[in-house]
Length: 163
Image (cartoon, rainbow, N blue to C red; front, side, top):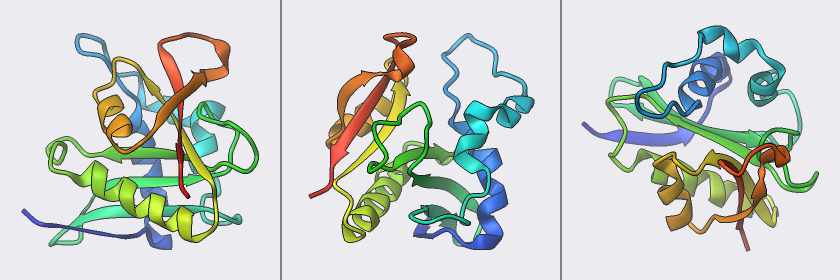
């Protein structure tokens, strides 16, 4: 199957609720939280009113049939990966069955290039140390700069320079 990476379209913003739910890392043997978790303020910060503000960017991975199977999006927000008000935070999610095919790398590279073109110096994210995506982020130049909200050392904040 071949995929295409492109900027997210306004008609697709509603899909971000599905993708933020899929972005929640669930360790093997643990139960996925109820879908209502996407309604909490901690999750809504990623999706509420996306596309209505300044400096909000997103890309999707689509199949030949135009099915959206992956997304990366972000903005400057007070989320788990927040560093400062000059650094956008991102969220990345790939639907099961489409993981391990390079889509995360392709989406992140498109997102990073867009932020670089827009003149940002850094991008940040949060990830659990046990999440396999951590290796992807490290491979693409993200480095740990702290723990999220000082709550636990399991969830870390990572930052990548863009210049």
